Amino acid sequence: MCGIVGYTGKKEACAVIIDGLKKLEYRGYDSAGVALQKNGRLVIAKGAGSVADLEAKLGDQFKAVTVGIGHTRWATHGRPTDENAHPHSSCNDEIALVHNGIIENYRSLRQWLIDEKGHKFHSETDTEVLAHLVEEYYAGDLLAAVRMSLAMVEGSYGLVVLSSHEPGRIICARQDSPLIIGLGEGENLVASDIPALLAHTRRTIILEDGELASITAQKVDIYNADGCLIEREVFTVTWDIEAAEKGGYDHFMLKEIMEQPAAVKETMRQRIDTTTGKVNLSELDFTAKELSSLEKIHIVACGTAYHAGLLGKAVIEKLAGIPVEVDVASEFRYRQPLLKEKQLVIVISQSGETADTLAALRLARQKGLKVLAITNVVGSSVSREADQVLYTWAGPEIAVASTKAYLTQLVALYLVALYLGETRGSIEPELAAEIVSGLKSLPGHLKTILSEESLSSLRPYCDHLAKWESAFFVGRNLDYPVALEGALKLKEISYIHAEAYPAGELKHGPLALIVRGIPVIAIATQKAVLDKTLSNIHEVNARDGAVFAITQEGFEDVARQVDSVFYLPSINDILAPVLSVVPTQLIAYYTALARGCSIDKPRNLAKSVTVE
Ligand code: M6R
Image 1 (cartoon, rainbow, N blue to C red):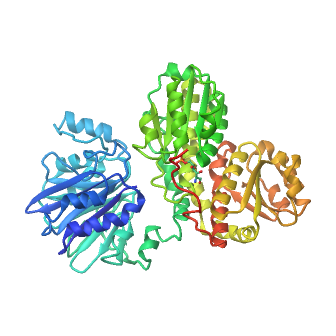
Image 2 (image 1 turned 45 degrees about the vertical axis):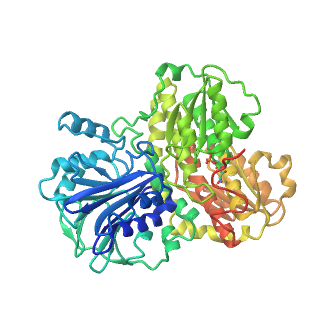
Image 3 (image 1 turned 120 degrees about the vertical axis):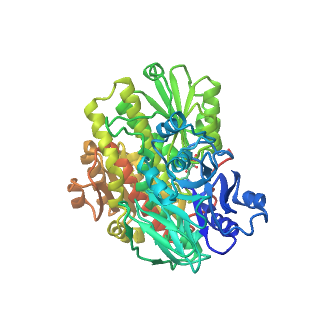
């Protein structure tokens, strides 16, 4: 999520780091900072704001410094403030570090460091515990101290550390958060992403999970999880800077689609208790009384987030037994909704800045209702004004078309539904356990769906679709909101007119438009209505429409009915929408590609709609 750059060599470290951080700013940021080794001391400069603000603050003061680390932050734990900006330092100011990822057990470590070891903390971040731990274990070897500290830690990290006692040396470590070492001549670098390195070198080593590295200007030593020195292959980057920002993909949208397994995993992390298998939303502080007396929930959102809300309705009603109304935010505020006691409003917004969603939130609070926000941006307007916030940890989403944020919104809604069901005692423990185990299987299933083989199987249908100006998406039950989302994605980036219908509605009008070859994408993952959906597919087949079906493994009948079929790994029907939407995202992407559209920035659209 955040950006990291570290440098050791002969050049001005500040300039190298600032330049590298600027190359990572496309990922989003809210604060920035550097730690520099100067005359046997560490100097830290940091604050909320942009890298340019930091650069202005630094001026020319540190021209002679040749070793340092830097960071751009995209807030997760703790608001975007000066104190929460990285680097974080230890009590004695002899250790400074920057970190991407989440330290899951930071609360207990922080308490232990304060109570037992007398450490003083200055920020709200999970990261700061690492600086104090390294100080605690430091006995003359930074590598050993980092290794011992990480043994105490649960979570994910891309970590880069400096000590005032070890001039010219940088230690870094990786677990579930990328770090790449850049190999130079008389200088070496480390960064969280390749664009930050390209001005200096194309020779890189991509650290693997569990590995640590010791980096000086002359030498890079890499150690595996067992502490053994290892040889790693050098990867020579051939991408230009623009391709590198996109992780080698042609578009941010495709990169973000590919990031979905990790985004989903991150959003579930710490929220499912691994020992009890129960959902643990400790960040919410509703009372059990508030939750058990709830009589209705309103979900309010726009666009893709609204489609997530439609699935949220189905899932909350099914698992928690609470009636849910879903509104498009721009309608909610003008329809004079009946907002009463014992109701909760859930707003969903990736950006947390959508004007209509914010207005709906304000209306609900004016009427005395509590608002729970599901959002992706810490410190956004929605997160600041809501009573409670459940963050999706999708990371910055840059493409206008929302993909990974949508999947994480779905996951957040499943967690809310389970949390409500468990607190109110309205869900059978067996069903809850089944859904939890299904949720845990999602990242693996998503990886399967995103395999090279699956992607190439979609391409011929997309080439056909690209020649049309009109298409249909159909589905029943939980497949219908997925059809709506698939149609939105297609029209948004390929400019093909796409309509979504509950499959049973076809014969009430739209069937008149079905002609030879017209693309119809049928989502058929729900066992209970599979036969019905198949009979609707027949209606299209009978008129020579070109059906592309998205279904689950085991529903072999579907393949017999259509020309093109995409099989998803088998999963509980309730969770199928998290998987079935992915082929629709890919269909939109490859169709837009075939039509030569501006995929990441479609005409007339903005990423964040801050006006009514
Ligand atoms: O930031 P938000 O989630 O509040 O944005 C809502 C919609 O504007 C957004 O989902 C939009 O529909 C996307 N471009 C769809 O891909």
